[in-house]
Structures are given as C-alpha cells and as structure tokens.
Length: 118
Image 1 (tube, rainbow, N blue to C red):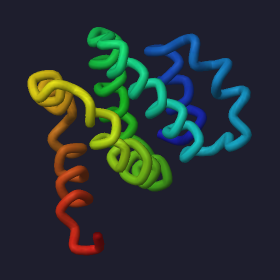
Image 2 (image 1 turned 30 degrees about the vertical axis):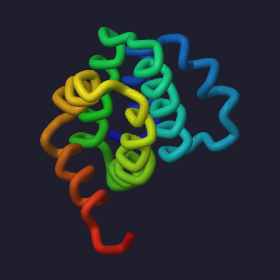
Image 3 (image 1 turned 60 degrees about the vertical axis):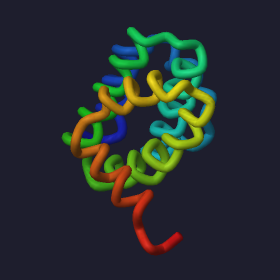
Image 4 (image 1 turned 120 degrees about the vertical axis):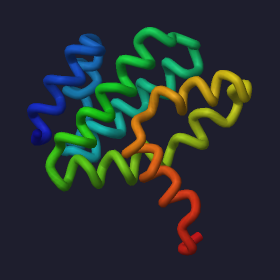
C-alpha cells in the first residue's frame, strides 16, 4: 500500500478527513499519518469509541500492508503520540484503547518506549 492507497482507505473510515488532507501542505505519508493521528486523538478526547476502534484497525492495516515510508510514518508519528494522546484518559479507557491496537503496533510501541536512546 502506498500513500494514495492509504489516503483512500482512511477516507472510508473518516470521510470528512478529505478536506483536511487537501489543506495539508505536506501531502506525503508523514503528513497523512499526522492528520490521521490528529483525528484519532480527537476521537479519544470525544470518547467516540466506535469510530476510534475503526481508526485503530485501519492504522494497523496501513502498518501491516504499507510500504516502508508508511510504516516509518506510523512508528514515528502515531506510535510516538500514543502516550500523549492517552495521558488524560482513565486507566480503564487507556487499557481499552491499547487492547484495540494490534500486537505489531504494541511491539513497535514497546520498542520505542523502552529503547535506550531516551
């Protein structure tokens, strides 16, 4: 999956994101994943679980099936923002969010959080 295919897949989950993607000056994989991550963060804050869980599944699909640039964008944008996005959630809600994140993304998260480069 490349940038354009990923953008089409994201639009299936969040049709209204199309306007944000058009406004985005960075029309590349990193800009796409940043916009998608911002929308996921908004869903977390609004407690919009139905769409949130669909978005998390789509992020996993992009990570599993995306090209190398998309995978890097997911790891360096989405994964990096998870702690910040869930910082003010209840422990129960945070656990629920993480339970909807794939094992591959959880592994990337653990690798990033527990790396010795901090």
